[in-house]
Length: 262
Image 1 (cartoon, rainbow, N blue to C red):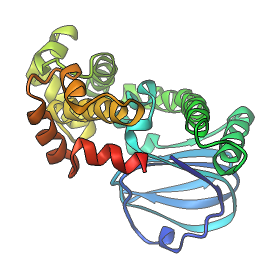
Image 2 (tube, one colour):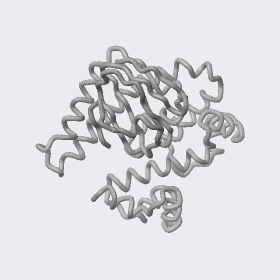
Image 3 (cartoon, rainbow, N blue to C red):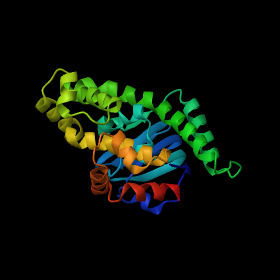
C-alpha cells in the first residue's frame, strides 16, 4: 500500500496507462478530468474515484487539485470492500462526496503514519494495516450507495452478481459454482450468465480470484508453510496449489512472500 498527496508529479499520469493494483483517488479541492476505459468523468471536489487493476486510465486538465492517491494490492483490500469492488459498474467508480471530513482526516493520518520515521519497523506494518482498514471501511458505504442507486436500473444480473460476491467472500474456497447457485435458488448456468454480463468474467474466474486473495493474505500476514496454506485452502496436493499459484500470478508462493517481506 502507498499513499501520497495530490498534486502528484507523475508525467505518465496524463497518458493512458494501466496499473496492476487498485488506485483510489480522494479529491478534497479543485477539479480534474479523469478518463477510465474511455468513460470521461468531470471530477469536482469533494469526490472519490476508484480505478481497478488493469483499467486503462489517465487524467487531464487538472485545476488546483488537492487530496490523496492510495495505491493498494488487491489482496490487502478488506473482505467487505472486496465483495463490492469487482461488481462496480464503471459509472459507479466516481462518487461525489458530502459530509466526508472524517474520511479526509483518516486519509491525513494514514499518510502521516506512512511517511513518518518515528515508528519502528516492527510496529509500523500493524499501524498501517489498522489505518488502512479504517480508510477502506470508510469509503465502503460511499461505494455501496453509488451501487444501490443504479443496481435496480441494471436489473436482475447486477442483483445476482452482488449476492454472489457476498457469498464468495464468506466462503472463498472449496465451493463449486453449483453450491453458490443453490444458495441463491437459481441454476448454475443462470448464475454464470449474470456474473459474466455484469463483470465481464465467469464465475470460475472469480472463484480463482477469491482463492488467490486468501492465499496472498496468508502468505503476507503469516509465516505458515506453503504446504499448510494449501491444505487450509482445500488443496490435497500442495504442489498443485503452487503450480496453479504460479500460473495465475507468474511467481511461486515463496517468491511472492519473499518479495513483500524484503
